[in-house]
Length: 444
Image 1 (cartoon, rainbow, N blue to C red):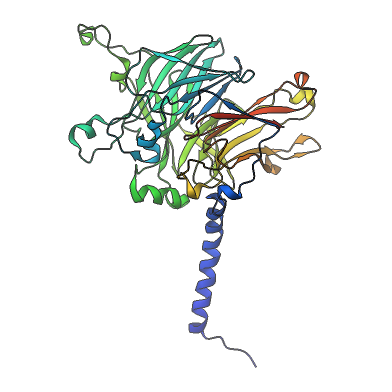
Image 2 (image 1 turned 45 degrees about the vertical axis):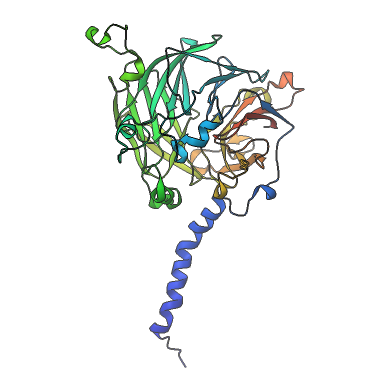
């Protein structure tokens, strides 16, 4: 006898099954990425063969390697209080005026010594965040440094109105290898810059900047972080500008040329290069000069894009890679000893929070993780694009005691001839509330 199923009885279990099928995969992934259940007490440290703490590197959120000089560049705060009361990226806006002035640090990856640069032609607050560096192929010792500066909004201070509390901008400095200072060239701002996080330098007069959120604070900002593909409200802005301001002589007054920071809007053009993705945070350079790496922080996704050859002010997304934690500022390690050693260890290096669900912790000890993502190989050869798959390997992990929070990690190779033939590198890890950059010697 045939069994006749009553539609009314089937409806509820069927709908429950559909909801589970739809919601379980993304919810399960969110549970993993945000690190629920990964408290610091459950975090097993993975520090490689040796761990060093680099002095004078307070709150270095971003770090970049200049290969020609074999030096690392980052932006560092001078006062621990800065992050506690004024840091718009984490919606900390307790002071109407930010305190202190950060600067740039130059780190020697061989001696692990740090130089804190003096800032010339610059005054006022410098609340650091993302940076990038660029140098011409014809003069590698001349370096342009772009840096986010999270300034207060004068309109908000004057009226205490609904105007945003912050009016962040980009600062452009010039540095020459060996100097003890960096010279401020100009400030850069445009109305499209709302919540800037990181910078990608195309050249000395052209950059990309991420706006990591639409909402600056409150419940809507939280929804942005949790919504993933349902809240695609961040964007990447393309900006062009002249290096030097050509202002009328009459505007100079009696005190000489104007401070470049007061003319941030002069000559700046901007347009949206990429939109409709959630929480685009960090930017990094990839294997080629046209590669743009984007870290979708709360989603734990590395986005690989290229500068559009037909429309250079636009980005084309070519691939996205999912990680099992949050990530931030991506970097790419190009193995300089691949031919010499017969093995290419190149790959993407991605730092993030191992337990993002509890960030920031009251104790200031936020567990961190660093991933190395490499293309799989067959018989030692790289697979073609069609068949390519990715290996995701944890190369560093800390319970928050050695380094608290991680937004950036990069690898500097060690010459095998100086290392008993071993294929190793120094991994540098840092974060927005880390009191020092740490370095770990790892196998590659």
